Length: 439
Image (tube, rainbow, N blue to C red; front, side, top):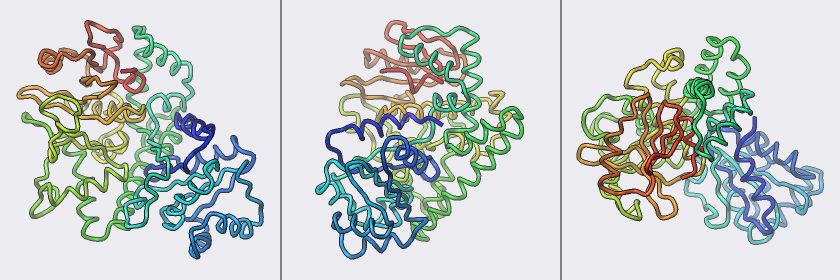
């Protein structure tokens, strides 16, 4: 399956000098696959060191952290020459060998033109007290597949190209094209962007019910594996709180509320549940890539980070498919788009993930006295408000309130409609174009 992250890898390869590349991402997001494929197709040779598969490798980094000595020992151990002017060297599952992670600093200083990559699950990577090579690596996120990557995986490249062109040119889509794209978007809400569920769905799609069942089964396995990793890496007491936060997010997103929406600390864990208690677990999940935190702003000025309230924010999951699985939402119900007001939070989470996959951010949210805007994006010294409507009703009272008060140069409204046009500074666009719209 093609990934947009490939462009990041090519740009890193072609730079005249480069820091070691650290590919971050959650378990089973595709890090190992894409680096193996990168080494196979783009280099004359690839040395792939998997610290999970070969535990003996860890001992090669124990004596010292000198790159020349390490390369010599690796050549002897692997019985092969390692020529850095033609070889990609990959440290996979590097969180299992803290010394290998630390030595990236010395590879950066000693071999500034070498192609050295490291990857591993963020559940544990960089979260311990090990000597992280700050400033000596290029850190990049591999996120779950975007909607465009999803439809290409289903063989819909022509549709992807047409949607991309429409997003750039801001041309309205024909009813037939919109219907097809929105139908696929509903399928994407079910599968999410984790590669294995997407691949299984693509294989079984002709038998839709079996495909949905297989997707949910894989997603439940993924959720269990994340909870197992939390218990393994975080320690018993902290793990209980981290798991409690993670498990509370879907229900909080789906909660019906007439007040100001934000993540509520009350009752997340038994006993006293406050921001002070949950700040560490929330940060752990954010750094692990499992959740996204969107701070709440009540005043609007640059920089937005200075306006954010420290203990008021929304929390979203890193993958929409996992969100549905954790809520036990029947895929058939999602596919019919027939789950009432609750489809709003699914649309919000999907738009957020699309924006992050496209490299947009950081993102904030705005709360007024009687209005709210889902996302605020800072772009070229402009603050762009983004409102999300899951259905066909585009009467955006909150957007009107915001625009009247803050006079943004540009604003975006994503909805279930196929309209894709700019109307007096407000861009109307379908939900599935969230990652392709250029602010």
